[in-house]
Length: 406
Image (tube, rainbow, N blue to C red):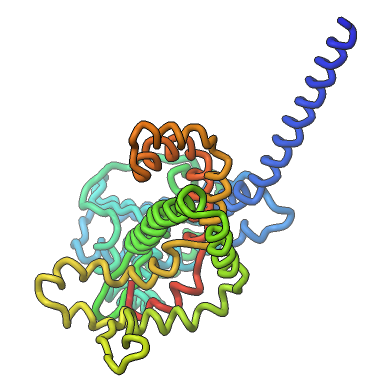
């Protein structure tokens, strides 16, 4: 008997160890694409496609250019022009390869009279603007020098901090190139910088979508997605759980079975077939006429960008920020599959708890909020995660109904 118990215990330990090993290996395999994505985000364009690939990205290179004007202190315009040429032309030629930032220090009379720091994300941000997009050569850089330098960190003072020259060959190449552009180069140092490793994330956050009337940043895109996803999750948990509780505990078995078939039928319809009917529903929201009569009712076009302007001033203040989100939220307020999952979970709850609460005089809503909900945390967690992934990754329906700028 003792040997049998020991053997069973050993067998359970071996089985449990095998389960843990398989789980760890499976989770590790799922994390490999995420790790590669994070690694690629910290690389330049050449390193992303380099073979064989490297998992650990190299630290970005930063070029520090020292300009020496001797004993004569030049004018501020001259300092700004030379610094703009050194920054822009260096990054334009070497930024796509390995240089992720340019620092310029101007020295005159043995003192630092001007310095500027230009990380790659700020240079890209300037290049995306209409004014700087036209800058292609030295003459145009000098004409737009003040606009270029105004968008980066700069000051007419500072101190010269020596840095280690980790790439002397590239430093000599940059110096030779800038001397050909007419810049009084004293020295060029190319070193490594850990701070520039995450410039790609900063560049994405500072992304600017500009039209004739609006300037939209990445933060607005993130806010729109968060509002739509949060609203859909709340509506899914509220409506689907209440409908499932009614099917599971309030209606008779036969009626509940027929209604459940209706929800199952909605799951069988491919989502692509629903785009056109949903689009027409959003365009003619509410009932256009009463059935079996000739009475017509006014409809609302939720896709009309001018709709907030035609509302009453009081309603306009309240609904102007809500109406653009309605076409994105309404089609996802309740899914048939979510009702099915909630009902299956509610069916497994003990009937004794429900009956005891009814004998104590609790209403059905009180039973749902105080008895069912505390026991339903697992299904609510699963539905929250599942709804978030589905809505956050959706692209086709938002693309169809977003007729106005976000």
